[in-house]
Amino acid sequence: MIRTKGYAAQNPTTDLAPWDFERREVGPHDVQFDILYCGVCHSDLHQIKNEWFDGVFPMVPGHEIVGRVVKVGDDVTKFKVGDLAGTGCMVDSCRECENCQDGLEQYCKNGNIQTYNNVNKYTDGMPTYGGYSKTIVVNEDFVLHISEKLDLAATAPLLCAGITTYSPLRHWKVGKGHKLAVLGLGGLGHMAVKFGVAFGADVTVLSTSPKKEEDAKKLGAHHFVVTSDPEQLKAVKGTFDFILDTVSAPHDFPLYLSLLNTNGVHICVGVPTVPTSFPPFSLLDGRKSLAGSGIGGIRETQEMLDFCAAHNIVSDIELIDVKNITEAYERMLKGDVRYRFVIDIATL
Ligand code: NAP
Ligand code: ZN
Ligand code: ZN
Image 1 (tube, rainbow, N blue to C red):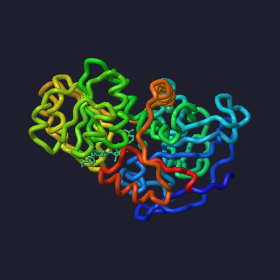
Image 2: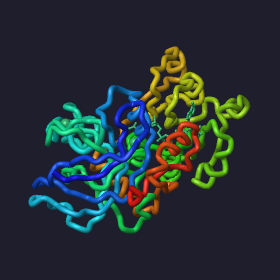
Image 3: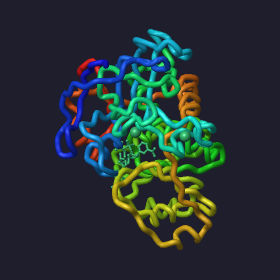
Image 4: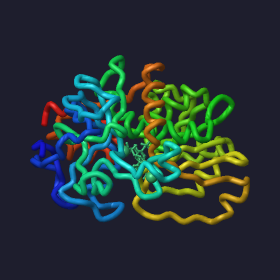
């Protein structure tokens, strides 16, 4: 076993603190990489607080992981020692179901294995531990190639915030001629703006935070709407082809559905912890759709990383010391993220 250090929540009511634990030895198909940076996703906070389901504790969060390869198994063909490497939200899947065969491992019919807060039933039967740690061992099929061209710390959030917004925009072929609204300007939202602009859409940010307007424009958004202002909302009623909803807290679905044009699609990627209900009229008037999307498959994640390298797209980040993780979560809850915290793992 490989001894390593991490930052873990021992149960849903404690703050994160240093914790030593073990990873499996490098198997024939495994890549071990030393972690240099790990992004802080709102999903980390939902999970350490047990807001979605009963978690596996102690929990080492983190699924926006980048670093450098230090060891490869005998049968590994895709990586060598010294390469940059990344891992996102998954570390395994069945590989056999139709979704895995189609490169949609995130929708594996037998269940994908999440990078943390899961048990790896396919490989070693051990709990999975995430990227707030020094080193990680992952089957090479779930390790991504990272460009040497981009700022490495700012690349980390692409592994979740990046792919989670890239994938639905690609799936629904959002681009030139489309009016796209990005609901919530946080980690996912700011990546959605960058991709929406890169794909040629007319992008509006719908935000609860008036002070983010200047940032939204700098990110490339064409318009900014403060959702607490009825006049501003009225002006965009019935206008959007797509709303990409990245909001982490309960919100008013009928209100946002009313902003869609005929045949418009409201795509949920945010995962509020409270179920929502709304009148079917808010969908049928205008033949609207309410849809959802989860992260992205491995092939598409590599495509997104290559797209970012070619178009010089990274996340806007605030690099933090791991000691300040609790404060970062508190700021995240207040919507005060500009626009992704990334942990410098050298501070661990
Ligand atoms: P984040 O950085 O905290 O951003 C969320 C943003 O939502 C906030 O910055 C804020 O933007 C807005 N917001 C917060 N509370 C709100 C409220 N009560 N009403 C309206 N807007 C509100 O979070 P994130 O890391 O981007 O993650 C967002 C959500 O996506 C989380 O629920 C996360 O778990 C989920 N997620 C899903 C997937 C997936 O596969 N589908 C992957 C990753 C994350 P403004 O200040 O602009 O209003
Ligand atoms: Zn995430
Ligand atoms: Zn599968």
